[in-house]
Amino acid sequence: MSVSSVSKKHLILEIRDKAKISCDLKRHLSPRTVGTIMRSLPLEGNAHLLGKSILYFETTIDSGTERARSEFKKGDVAFLPSTGSVCFFINDVTSGKTMTPIGKLTGNIDALKDVKSGDIFCIYEETT
Image (cartoon, rainbow, N blue to C red; front, side):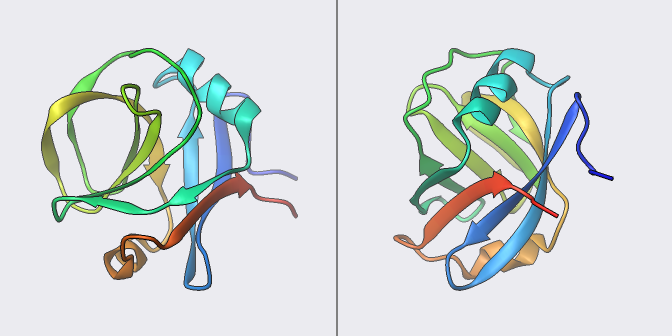
């Protein structure tokens, strides 16, 4: 039986050749944005650091702001509409930019602390 449901999708965030982290996208947080991302999977891109607390990678997804927030907790996953980026928070953050909340990292978040700029992020649906 799949761990995913209509309201929550279980995904894998892979840091190429380094680690795999479980991740849930939650439709109730931002239904339109999460739906767009799910239809676009798998997604892949170069890792970038924003300060010491946010890792992200750019995508070609074009989705406006939905239920925007600027405060995020360690492990949150958000979408930054201005750049089409998927963001991962490795610490609690109050961001200068508003982002769309889309999910939560459920696996070993500390693996993100070893990510360097240029590492490859890939998000895909877990297959059993």
